[in-house]
Image 1 (cartoon, rainbow, N blue to C red):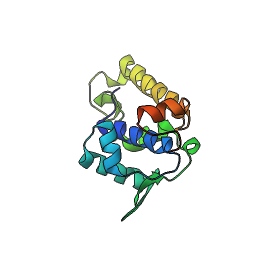
Image 2: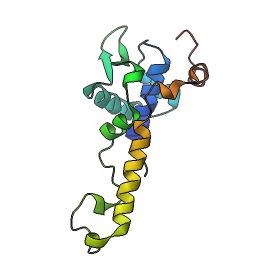
Image 3: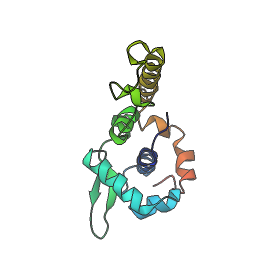
Amino acid sequence: MRLTLSTDFALRTLIYMAARRGDRATIGEIAACFGISKTHLMKVVNRLTQQGYVTGLRGKGGGISLARSPERINVGAVVRDTEEELSVMGCLNEPGFCRLEPDCVLRAALREASMAFLKTLDGYTLADLLIPSARVASHLGLSRSA
């Protein structure tokens, strides 16, 4: 399974925000930190805002911040909310996709593998991703006080 760039950017944005420990950041700042497209990141942040993961404040001194504590943001939920298609093959979503469908063991195996992937991610929160917090902050160019 391969996640889209939107999900990648969403997870990196959430990690960045959690490492800031409540301080607001701008989309430009996050995009520059990761060397990613500001335009694409704006769309991702808009979606994260609609889904209740971040809040935004416009104007001078504005920016985005986490809407919930990192302990209350589940990684599996973020992936489900940001991915439009989680099926690794068309037959998992489209009935009648293949003539083998009624007796296909591969289809069942792929469905099981996809569920295991998500179940593993469900075992992690955003806080878990920050366990080496000082090192994560350092990699992001953030001081310990940020």
